[in-house]
Image 1 (cartoon, one colour):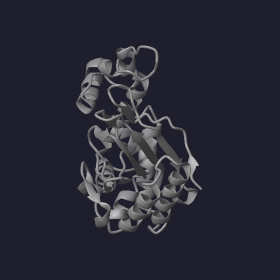
Image 2 (cartoon, rainbow, N blue to C red):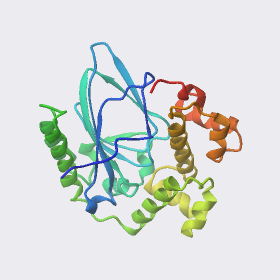
Image 3 (spheres, one colour):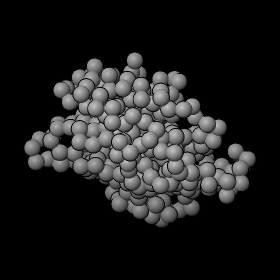
Image 4 (cartoon, rainbow, N blue to C red):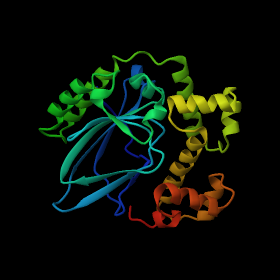
Length: 273
């Protein structure tokens, strides 16, 4: 049975007018928690001629996405992920755990960074059959609760055919959970010390299983926190936010935020919510 989860998602920046389509989120079955973080199912219907560019600061994971016009395994994104929404549409997505990417492809996740594979090319999954089943369920009435529930069940049926997560996969899941969950982690050395790894071993692990560097993990967590703080109703004190996130000064914070999002922190904070 699909298990709804909290709809708040700090990685989702919405469009520049503050719009986001309804996104239904569900937790995975307990036995799949080492493979899947959550499922997300947006459904939208926009007036003719209206375009909404949705922006996401993606987590360090791969995504399985079946939409009304494609079915893909999407690799981790180093920058800001965007998608234009027009007319009516839907998508059924699984945010995977860091361990899952290489289980699906049989290769280093670095080969998927900033790109994607059609599900038909993914060796570890019956992507074609899964996508056909989801399309048949969602296309008649994508907003219907039963359609959402059945689509999640089809994803889970496919993921149950994957092998168990290996020890290295469990380790990389733990590394990412630590970096994302501990606001005081500002240096790669802290991760090295926590897990008893050399910096070189950690770098190789992250390249192979995540497709990104340990430094990127820390920066992305900081930017997620920044987006959350800048979205609060009260005007943000940017210098204070920079200090709270562990930046040496506001200038470094502004540079990082603008490099990834294309906006200054002040510009983002002033957007409609």
